[in-house]
Length: 247
Image 1 (cartoon, one colour):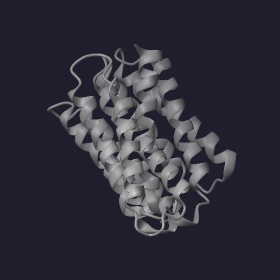
Image 2 (image 1 turned 45 degrees about the vertical axis):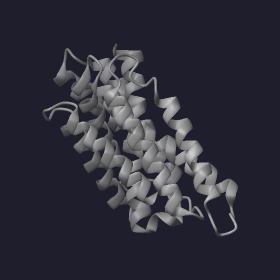
Image 3 (image 1 turned 120 degrees about the vertical axis):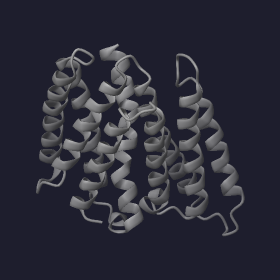
């Protein structure tokens, strides 16, 4: 999967997050989008890291991510993420169970466990979008971050490499975040929008630098998963920024 194809996929998924924040009944549609992110991450995650037992890793990442999104939705009061440590712990136990069930000699056991655990964390981060939608800024915060994410992802398709690509992604996200926040004011002020955009740009640009040279991304599933990872991970950062800067 080419860099431009991954960038377009990331931008489309970010647009889906932004739309999901406003579609009624809220936040049910956004939960569906978060579940889609988890599914797409889990499908190709074992291929990105070339894990030796892709079936078990894929299932554990899927269970962890969907469990986190559902728990965040059903938690009745603040803090809405208080059960996430338990979800991650249970998912890690399931990762060990999956390894115990292998019948291939358990080759690359350490790599398989660590890779699956990393996938769990990425998938769980998608629940941050649901948590962000439940804050006072709610849909406006999610929309600001998602639009900035889409623009940052689109900038990854430009013929730039290394730190120049990161700088362009961050700059574009800051300007976009500030602009969208200004339009959505007073729910999200311009400075908060710039902060949100900056964090979004750093996540997207940093992950682009991290993943761009992996040969496994030429595969379709791995490419789709890699394109979804920035959207999933950004969800948790957006929630944190919303708590520290906006609320």
